[in-house]
Image 1: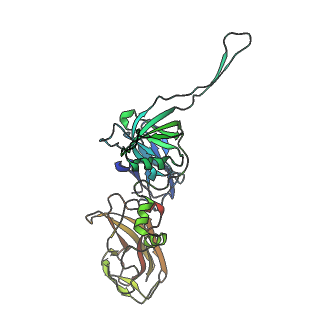
Image 2: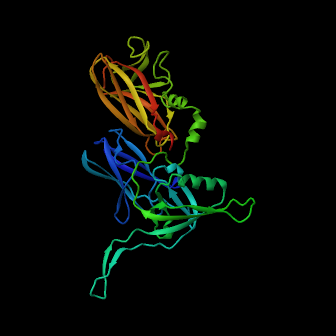
Image 3: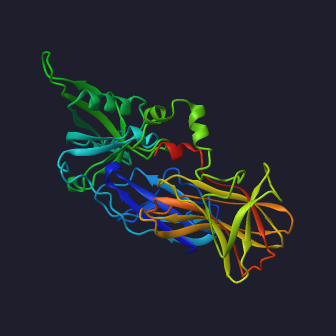
Length: 409
């Protein structure tokens, strides 16, 4: 499939996951289209850098979609006149708490966003912008008017634990414009708010009651500019607890996931089809050995597959290898994606023409498709190669790329 834009609602985080396949471009702009026809650019997707021209090339999240309202997404690019449209998708509010809970979303730091109890949004004042000019010699003055200012109001929130209070304080700390998303039953209230002086107070006296009432005066404003960093769901504290140090993290995210990429000892963990695969010391791109794929001469496709390794949604992976063919011919590499039961889903593929007797690098970078749990690295020759068309393979690695978006998801 040359193009496609899959939109999946993730209710727990009140966001939409987007997976773009647009094989004719390297960058695209992704926008959200509301039911009333208004179009909103998706943050961090203007443009979205398309990493693969063979499969899903970009994965991102929209943390600002309205609740309980169907929306669609579209991707456009100056490199191709096509418009790629998504399926309709709705981010549902939590039905157990629909009457009182709203999402306060930090557009630039989504990890700070909070689902919080709102006890009311007060009367909205739309201030006039006018001037009344008395005219000498006439009783009635002349009015000079302009567009009214956007609404000004106050929302009242309730936190009931110390953790909720600390979370809301952290959300408000940098004074950024927030995206306010209320349940659809509230009349489709979705807007951006610049919050003024925040006041919180607890019950009179002292004691174990941790309730705090917050009064937040706000002005409805335009959507803020900027790119969001740190999606809701995992914090830097979680990463620190797992890796300890930055160097440990970087090393872990640059180590091949497959067990035997270099063939220095044997060719274990690799399974051939249409031929044989063995360790060879006749050629090596690094070290002293490589893997040698020898066709049986009768199979139309001759390939070797690594063992299955686990993958996670939203991350980017690189399947790469150096190949040296005995004859000039086409060779392709793929990240072969499988579901939780090991059933094949799809493959992200890249191909090269390998010149005889020359080491050629081949790689593909792609995120896993929806439903993928594992992946295998595949190197393949097609077109019924004869037994003389041997292929040496070295540094055949499957790596999760080290990016902040693959860590804080």
